[in-house]
Image (cartoon, rainbow over the protein chains, first blue to last red):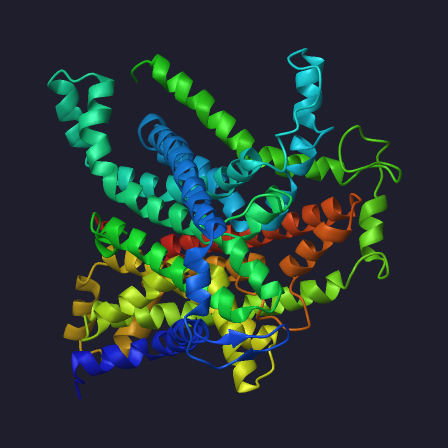
Length: 284
Length: 278
């Protein structure tokens, strides 16, 4: 009667394995294969050539774009971490009743369930040449002419990233903070630690796993993005994702595939490093 | 209760600004969608009207947004049901620590962190090379699952980490089969969390853009339709559409929150009577 633990385990895991096999592993293999193919203006043909890669690594533009991708990821990470940690700290340690904590937490998470595209569009009336930010600053007399760099610039790209992805920091950090044993905090306070010292030496180290999980989310979302950069920069800035999507729209699939392979390897290396610091399954 | 410190007020103000930052832009386009017929994409408001909402309901003014909405809704439901079923099954599987579970776990993590456009590109290429027809309900459906399933799985990990195994042992001691234990003990206990998984499944699918981009075929889903509009529509009609879909998302969240509450109430009424006899 009792089936082996392994057999039932496998049977229950079959659906997930099938989906990931067909729509994750197979596409990755396909991309790797196609990255060695050739392309004409209208079609792609099977081949085994390194042209796509040699072009990729030989191009100064590509290196610049990879650098820009890391830049976006790093700046966004720094902002989302600072904001996310502060918000989670406030919710976990300064809000006193649990029902209030849950209510405020929900308030923070609701935008996550709405459309990213719409949330990006929402910045236009704010940042445009005649937008709210410019007209407010002009009416205050801070500036005489509208600021041009508010929209369609690195500034607006990063602003949108922070707007979209801070939640991915708040949620895991809040989750870890709520699991910190409160008696540890009391012990620190009883021993004469100031609030700042408690934060620095007790809460921060114990929150590291949550920070790592949030970091994984934010970094991968920003590094793999192509639509935020395209939309918020008015197609004036580039990251690796846009390089890929441009190639796709020109039907240069082999070139897009080669760039994808390099991007995937880059992302996996970054994640591999981050995963050394945290055991995701235990921290949930 | 001890007095609030200064840092509380500073942090509370910071939190308030954060919420304003989160909701401000959305509220702004909410207001601007009521722009008068001659108004533009930014303030000032030239009158207040429902003009742009009316425009949405006229077929020729914009693309096929209602068709796109129907497709996104159907796809969302398909993804939701599949995500719940598959996540629960895999959650149960991972508790058994079967051989190969480590590999599958890292596959799920890869699925979560892989840039979405790669899934789009890879699935598109496979379907093209195999001569299959790209359609939102086949290639689009599968691509979205690579995003929703890892989320569902992570939630199941969180759920089972907090699951008290003694309930199952009690059921088994009383002679329940493995299936009966799952059906009558495990599933009812984890039911509220499954609502969460369902909410993830539906809304992540409903809003998904990048993974559907090259995999939805000739019929757009709603996010693709909206994105198409951003390049060629320069009137507040796009705000009206944004406001409507955001309201729709709020409605969905509301439905899920209410069902969680109802479930919790029912449970409180009918479930545990421990300690009542004292």
